[in-house]
Length: 373
Image 1 (cartoon, rainbow, N blue to C red):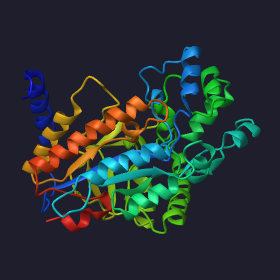
Image 2: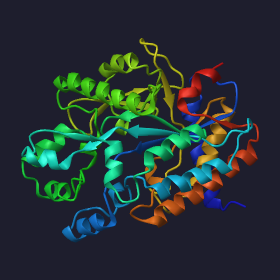
Image 3: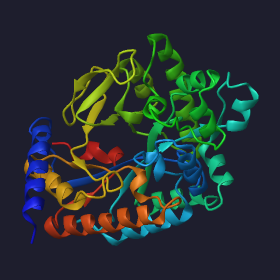
């Protein structure tokens, strides 16, 4: 039995989702997508680094950098265990669209350049530098073969490296301190560094396109195929990069209900509203996230029931239930309690979905075309 507060929260979640779901194309079946961003990206490298940031007085207590870290082998194995337990109407397990970052900063080379040049290492090389991560790529590919973990392209880096280098060159104390701990955290406004395809000048766009093309090259070299979908870090991208995405084989643009178009000023955007399966002039379709499941972001919220209400709204309006669930919810390399809570809630969510809607099935974003009416 839900409490009064849970009922109110569920109703609010249902109504908010319905504002998104009334528009756009319909789908033939009840389908569930779990779109999860940031796989392969570094955040904070260790619990020791978190402690150092705290002792330095950096504002990390409420930051995602408090818990987010490169996923470990334990994280992946435990996640796969939960996903594989729950089957859709077609007998296939719950499936996660794992939106992946292809590279991370090479801190040694950047420092050797006096912070004037950006250098990167492939995410697979980063795996080898961490103590419980060396088998990660094998696990990713195992997840693919078991139909539970489908990598898609999120970016070469989850980093606006031009802004980051500029701050480092200015000898910003907090940024340099974090750099020395192999983190891109700024101590405060970390989102200005995370927005890889935001720009300070439109002159940045050609370089962004080159970075995207390079990232897709790494993706194809790693997985033997291209990515049919793309999600911009922080939902922030200029339409001028979209032809490059199409050229790489992208057919779906993941996002929230509004695309955040850069204006040249950080944190100020020109939003473009999108609806599910809307097609732009290039023939690219937009997939709109209409369900939110982020237990790590607010431990006081009942994420399971609010997400279930949003799933109910999606199905009522004949839309796919597109669940936004970032990697941070499922990683425990820094704090195992963070992962344990996220996986426990995910387990309950998936069990509830399959019980309430036994005709629902799980797919990844690259499979959407087959389900449009």
